[in-house]
Length: 231
Image (tube, rainbow, N blue to C red):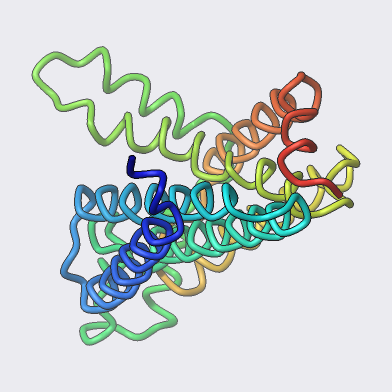
């Protein structure tokens, strides 16, 4: 019976999505959200937008359905990018604001960051994180966030790029672009003092991208993605 009012339900879902997104942006800028709050808002925003588009597509032709789906994935991609920018450069729960420039100069902070925070030796940080699991009585949360978080952080990129662009079909082009993007993030974190420059972060980020692209591009899932949005 509810599907008799699918257009109205679609608008309600879209309204929920819009309000949740605006509230999320405000709370994020004001730094009122913890990690659990970010996850909750993300689920509400994504679910309400998807429900709205699916209901809307039950009342329109194939051409408009394709446009609606492309718009939906574009909005979700932009939301994901916003999330990534916040997590990588501003999130206090990930110590993005741990450097206090009121007590030292920027040049000195940068030097300290280079000497004590930078790692250019492959797998050094990964080995340190793995050792944490072997020490009884110590929380594994930091190691899990560092290893698993870095691995999955960029995994959605191939999904969205394959959905929304044609150039991403070329493996070398996409993987090279992602490698450059990840390196730019590491360098930017170093110069903005929002994170350490660590070769192991690059390794984990790129490994996640490589696995994600392989699973999507070279499996039947890719044909399903092409069906979702006809290029």
